[in-house]
Image (cartoon, rainbow, N blue to C red):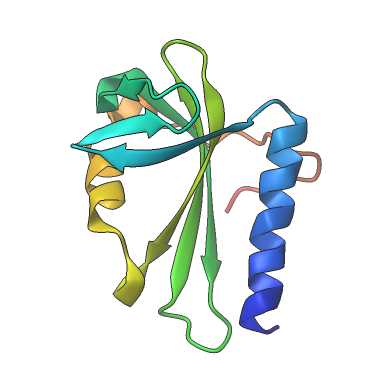
Amino acid sequence: MMDNEFAKHELNYIRRYEALGFTDQYRIVKDQLENLDTKNRYHPKDVSILKEHRYEGMSNPSDTSLLYVIETVDGSKGTMLANYGANADNAIHEFMNMIPEENIKDDPMLPNDVQE
């Protein structure tokens, strides 16, 4: 599988989650998660990771990306894609590591979803 096929695979997952209502997009700003649409910002304790999908690059397995399926304390639901490895955005991973363990779930959410 080529890298652009991986991008398609990740996009397919994002579209499947959007169909379930996870339509918001996020970024990290000043150690907080920001909703790109509403500009609301959240501290780690206000964020739940409902599911995490990991994708390894076929040409270089160290090129990994993570798709986070997120819900916030005020009901915002969406996804955030983060690179891992040499192209990682450390701010994203530092934020995700600060989310309390009780806010991290790994329940099947999509049809035919398997535990990774």
